[in-house]
Length: 115
Length: 117
Image 1 (cartoon, each protein chain N blue to C red):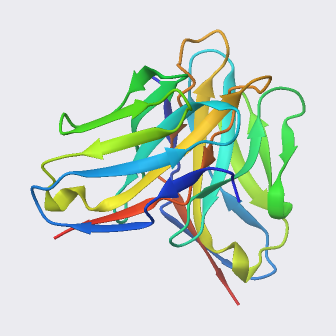
Image 2: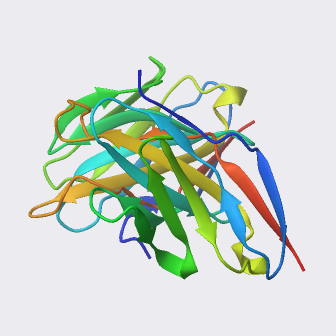
Image 3: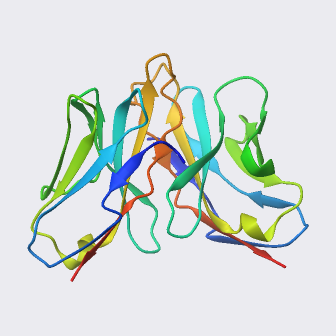
């Protein structure tokens, strides 16, 4: 158990809809990262937050947005969903007080299916 | 530009034989290197890292990796493979502290390791 939690585990929705994925980082970690993993593909970095502020953006679509709240949990919002958005979405965290910003610890992921 | 290459999509090894999963990198400054494993329908698990010091790094589940600066490689190894080692393995790199990388990791495409009984 990495200490990173994600909800829900599975999500099935229709094209055009909007969903919200939630992530709670390891206790004390300040950075949260979101990744997308499509079938038979590697990890695509979407976005990083550090202590509530956006720190870096990767290949995140304009239809997607994220935020990190004062309690450090994060949400990834996906809107106007398309079939191609079906994927595993992972959250990872790192960099707590007194910790190095080294390895990231991953949650179990949310499997999104768009029909 | 920073990059990571895992040149093999798949590696097949017989149980009990040694295994190697290859990783090469390109990064400015001193690299921070990582290996992760992903079992089916699971999140990624951290295996080991190289930050500084001894070039041979030992990690979880009997895995180790050797940092080779001249060859810019960080290959993952295990002396005797188990069927349970079958999984997807990812190599990642981050530029060292003198590089403003925002703590992002650059990920390889992954290598599927299949251990046959």
